[in-house]
Image (cartoon, rainbow, N blue to C red):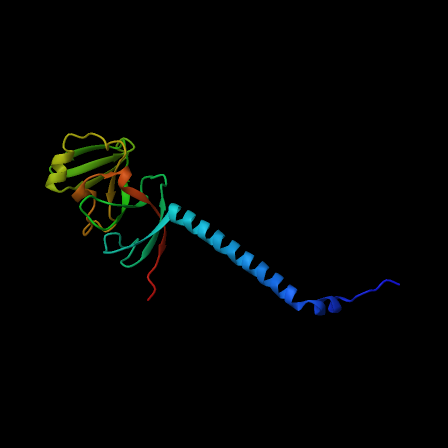
Length: 182
């Protein structure tokens, strides 16, 4: 009659071998999870970034000390909130796109009138004298340029003060707002 062993008897035979196998499996699983986390972290960093909001220029939409998730290299459309850099400024700006390439415009008395859909809708903004002078000969928003304004226009430093935002200086569009925890 063949020798039949129970499972318990097999386990009792070599606990050291079983312990080493368990440790090896757990080590491999841990390394696999670390590699997956690293690769997904790299993907997230290439696709998204986080920016703090400072100031009140985007109030009430975004408030000071909030964090926003920015999707890099996203298609930019009118009314998107974008994150971008401006030459001579150390921090990123977060503003709303009002004028897109091809929009008609004209300048009168340091004011810009932006036409949306052939003057079906218009926006009028007071410009700084230097930007008004820079824009005076334009009839459309140039290719790869955007006119961006803060939602709180009374305090916002935006395209009215520093001019158009170039497509290459735009990091991406705001996808999500993380409110401040108090």
